[in-house]
Length: 267
Image (tube, rainbow, N blue to C red; front, top):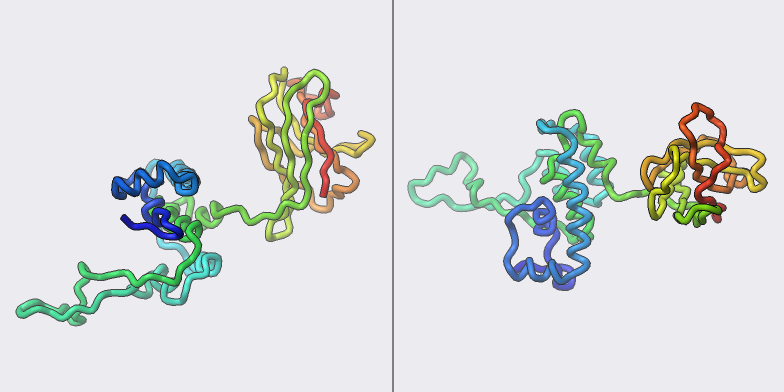
């Protein structure tokens, strides 16, 4: 039984379990079933694997560009030897063995079947497990490319404002809204409703002035959650109210006047 980080199942085993591989001992399976931390990590990694499988029915492995590994290594804090191994420039920890009598050496005295991996410096469980799932799930495939894994890494945006969305008369739904700023400075509004309203048309997301004298449409909300790019230069101090409306299919771009939920952003 291999445990790590305060007697939790090691991340490589969790990553393979997330891929439904037949690995792990009965003791490890019992631990995962009783441990909320390991169970939650498998669920998170399984979501990444599912996204990888949806990338196409016939994926073809391709070699990523060197700069992709540079970005991955910088993000995960990999050492130079591990970085070189990932790029195929180094065999990590190949075991040097003495040839037995009559055994060919192949010129190096190294038996690839007996190669061992030299452990890297300890990193966080989540980072190493994400790397294992990214490799095992084959995210670096034709069409998707190595950049797909980079885009599926844990969210690195920052929440700069939020709002609680309350129901307006005639509605019971509630929700939340968050303004997030990405590393490149772009902003987005993330809207989450607790349930889908039973409206007559479709849902549209708006930003309003407090006195409802002006409004900006951000787009259609499909289902209960959505992320909407904010126009560059939009002043949230001028348009701080998040509004989700029920819009009829009449071709009119204006607000219907029927709001489902609404709430003011609080930076």
